[in-house]
Length: 235
Image 1 (cartoon, one colour):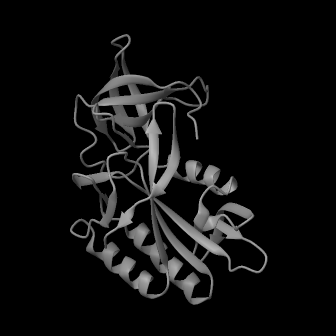
Image 2 (spheres, rainbow, N blue to C red):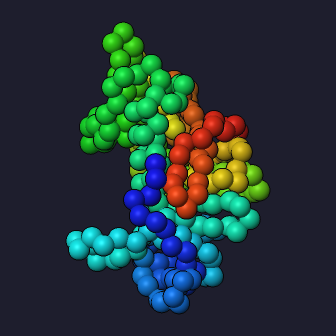
């Protein structure tokens, strides 16, 4: 999935009110405010002075003319901070059948209603096969070198999604919790149980009910984001 417009580099001044980020463009020195499409804590990613990549837009309907897309760790690695990007990248991969685990499914639908007032990120269908319900979570937290963690803050909504998936598994469907690590510097995934013990408990209950877990890495550059190889899961 390529970015719609060419990204520009900047330095982060501050991130505030969850969805706003003040930055200084490296090319001109102009101070701007960018939209931050990430409701999480962004632990370890929002220190003042961090080099970031922004996507400009000329949409008259948008008040903010930049969107924060990447953190540049300046060591050859990037983290994607836009939580909408994983679903877009995954949809591209599912539609092209480039993920072997799901390649046999011909019909891919997004945001399908199910459960108790919930929507599944992707519902895959194919004649003669059980439907596959896929819930996607963007992973950006890393507190130990090479290890990605989820969540980065308490998420009661995330625990609810696990309960809904467990119900689908009990009904005979494939139920899949898919973590997409938006970092290029991690090779293993685990749960941040100290941050949200309730989520970790819900995860284990879901696994016992038959929910499958997959964790994929991503290839990230200022040009775009694509789903990469499976990562090891240590839970």
